[in-house]
Length: 193
Length: 146
Image (cartoon, rainbow over all chains, first blue to last red; front, side, top):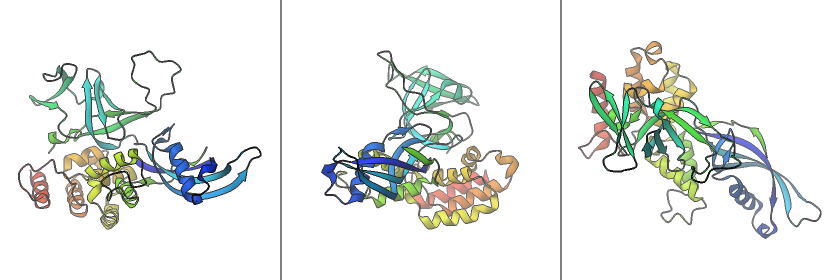
C-alpha cells in the first residue's frame, strides 16, 4: 500500500531558517508542504523518505530568501486495486460501512459490495447506526466493531475539489477508497479463523 | 512541483515501519521529542498492529527466495508479506484463480508462509493460552488437515 515517488520541487527557504544546516531546513520546509496531504493520482503523502539532490541556492532580486530546486522521494500511501487491507470499523449505516486505518479514514464499503446475501438491521445499542448481518448456510454473522475487518480495494477515487458545498454535507475528502467484502476470506477476521 | 517518477518503488509495510523506527518512533513514549509529525505516529500505530511489526529483513529475503517457485505476481507477493495469511482461506482472496494455478500446492505455500514469516502480534485466533508462538502452528495444521 506504500510506495515511493520521486518529486522535484522549487522551494523557497525563508531567511529565519538560515542558521540551520541546509538539509534540515529543506526537510522542514518539505514536511510542512507535503506531509499528510493528498496529491492527485499519487496518494496520501506519509513521509519524506530522503533528499536526492539540492540545486540552486539563487536569490531572486527583491527577495530575502534563497530558492532551491530539490529532488526528493516521498512515501505515498496508495492502495492498488486488488490489495487486501485490514482496517477497523468506524461507522455503519444503510449505505454501507466506513472503515478507518488510523491515519486514513475515507474507506467506504457500499451496500452492493457487501458479502452476498446480507442485510442490515437497526443496531439495538446505537440509535443512529445500523448493523449488517451476513447470512451464510442459515447462520447470521454480524459485522460489529470488535475485531478488524479485511477488505479488498475495489477502487481509488480522487474527486475534484467542489466549488460549493451544501452546508451539512461531509467535509470534502480528496481521496476515497472503495472496498469490497464480497469474497472468501474477507470481512471480520473472526469469521474465518 | 514536478512529478519525476510516480512510482519509484513499492514498499512493504515492514520497510515503512523500519523507516519510521529509524526516525525514532519506537523509542519515544512522549511523542514530542522525536522529529516526526503526529500523522507519522498514526501510521506507526497502525503498522505496529499488523504482521509487519515482527518481521525482519532476513525473513522477508528468505520468503522472496522461496516463493519464486510458485510463480506469483508481484502484487500477490506484496499482499502475502503484508497480511501474512495463516490458512488456505486467507490465501484464496489474495491469489487470483488460486485453484487453477496452484491446486494442491496451496497447502505447501501456506505452510511455507507460516514457517518463514513471524506471526502477527495480537493473535485474534487462539482465545485461550498464553504462548502465542506455540499455538500458531497447531492451528495451521488443523486447518490443513480438515
